[in-house]
Image 1 (tube, one colour):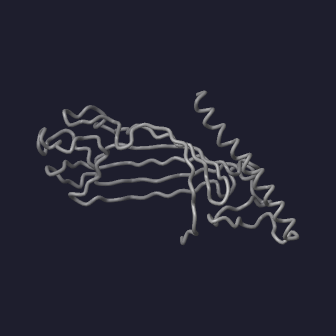
Image 2: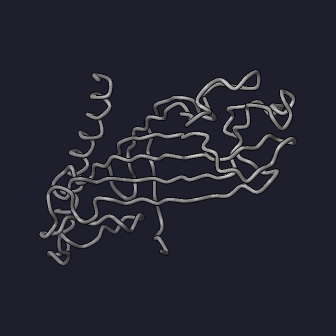
Image 3: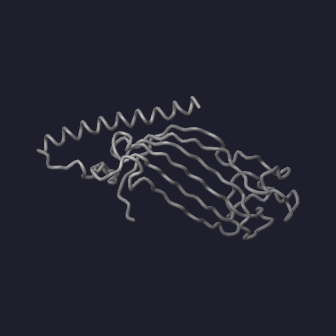
Length: 215
């Protein structure tokens, strides 16, 4: 818990500092332009999406609290997704009846960003989660089905702080792969364990967004 608390303190402090810097720059710009721009106008950063708080914005859970997307993908036969849970030669250990058939036909993925504060320095703060669900039952060169059997979930979450001009500071915690249902057990010699393609890690990063969304 102490380690997590330290990680959360950094984004909050950055949020306050960024807000103070942004406020200073904005004040200077307003003086030079004789107040030609109101505080509710959009930022001119390359992100082209940052919006200062309006007088009507709520302090907690404003109207733009949630942003995200969800996506469903289909991998055609002979192009199955390999989450690195079973060895590529799993078919040698039982043929079409080999127990380690964790190669995915379907992917359900998404991201949800939550910005709970509508006013003040914490307006720049957000929490996000990014899960990926895998489904299928197939074995390379041995068994190809359209089965939607649940395989498991790869997921991560983190916190972020918008700095300025499209830059965000992010802390991400990625977890081990979690299997679902009856496949949450050792599946024989070809089973590689639950590390999955990325394993478990924590990263500190800076994201730069640019351009304007078409839709």
